[in-house]
Length: 197
Length: 197
Image 1 (spheres, one colour):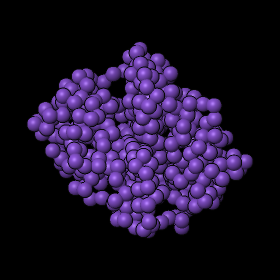
Image 2 (cartoon, rainbow over the protein chains, first blue to last red):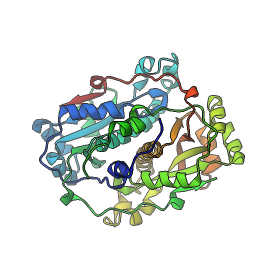
Image 3 (cartoon, rainbow over the protein chains, first blue to last red):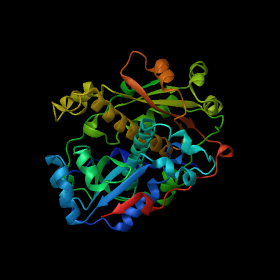
Image 4 (cartoon, each protein chain N blue to C red):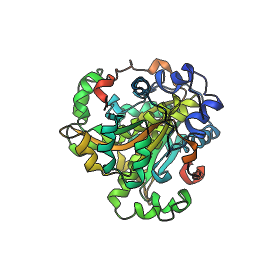
C-alpha cells in the first residue's frame, strides 16, 4: 500500500464528521450494515481476537423495548434513527482464537487464565473495534451518534442475557439532520495531549 | 458531508492495511506526528472527554529505556521502528471538561464521583482514540504495528510516573517492510459477530 487519503476523504471520516442527534427519514439497509461489518472487521485487534459483538436494532418493536433503558435525553433521537448498534464484547473471545489466530495454536492460554485479564482485553479491543465501526460507517457515507448514557445492566439483560457478551456503548447510525448538531467542542492542543521524546 | 470513500481509500485504511513487524529505514517526522494528532483528535469521545495521552518515543536513548519493558518478541521490531507511540489515558480527564465540553458546565460531575467509573470511561474512550490514531496514521500513508505485549507497570513507571495517566497499548509507526508480514488471519463471518433485530 502507498498513498494518502485526499482532503475530501479526511474531512468525511475525521475533520467534518460530527456526532448526530437528529436523523433524516431515510432507511439504512441490512446490506449497508453488512458492508460496515465487512470493512471494520479488518481493523487490528490483539491476537486478532475480534471480540466485538453487535446487535443492530431496526424494528419499531425492538426500538420500543430498548428505549426505556436509555437516559431520557437519548430516547427520542434513538427512536428517530434508522438503526441503533448495540456494541458489546465477548469476554470469552478466546474460545474463537484457534480459528482467528491459527498461527499460534496456544493463543487461547494467553487470555483464559484470568477472568479479569480476559475482560480487560475484551474491553480494550472491543472499544478499538467500536471506533473502527464508526469510521467505517462514515467512510460509507453514513453518520454516527454514539452514546454512553444508558443502563448497562438493563441493556445486557435485553440483548445479551445467557451469553458471555457485555455491552460497551451504543451508536445510532443513519443520515444525520444537521439541524440537530451542537456547536463543535474544542480539542486539546498537541502539547497538552502528546509529547515527543 | 456526503459521499463515500473510494475503493483505494477503503483499501488503504481497512482492507489492505496490515499490522507491521518490520520497518523500512525511513524516518517519521515530528510534523507527521502532529498531523496524525490533528486528524485523530476529531474522532468522537463521550462528552468530548478526549482522555488519550501519547508519548512518541523516537530517540535512540529513549528506545533503549523502553525496550526492556516489552516482551522479548516485541523488542527488535520496536528498536527498528522510526517512532513508537505509547498510548495512555488520563483517569482524571474530567478536570479538562470545563474547556472540552463548554455547553454543559457540570459535565465534570458526571464522572468524578467514582474513581472506578472515571477509569472505565477513560479506558473506553482512550481506546476509541487509540483506534482513531491508527486509522489516522494509515490515512496519512503510514503503517502501524500495535502491541499489548509489555509490562504495564514498568511502562507507567517510565513514562507516566507522578501523573494521572495509565498506559493502554503501544503502537509502532513508520513505513512497514512487507517482508515482515504474517499471513493474514481470518475474520468472523457477519452472523457470528452481528445480529439484526
